[in-house]
Image (cartoon, rainbow, N blue to C red):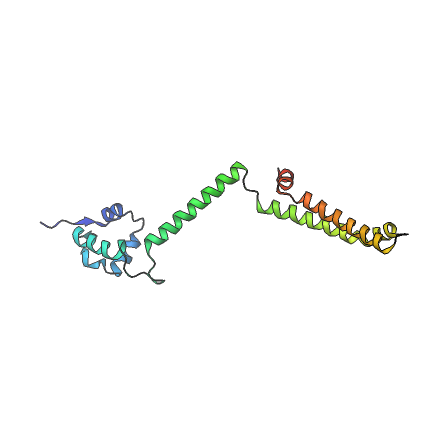
Length: 161
């Protein structure tokens, strides 16, 4: 007596979600195990599956290794879960909010530098060259110090909270 398995049983055993996969496998050589009328020879099918799907000796762009794809997918899923957990803990900030905060910092700094030509003449009046240089350095240093204070990670997090 020859044992046979129905296609639905093969799908269940090998966790195949689509009957199209079985059709595709038949085209790739599993036809040797196909008995007909949705029946398969389990021994021949298992041998074919082990040789062609499980071990998959011919890996290439036209025939990607299923195990590698599954590992890549599982790693991506794990990375997504890790990011979600970090976001819930408050360890990650939404990119749009950070971009907005940084563009605001750049805008404030740019305005401060653009105001220097209007402020410096009154600050420099009556000073010699060395004192003028010191005043200009102090003005630029104040702008950069303000930027550094406003750009700290703690301040950005506080503003976004």
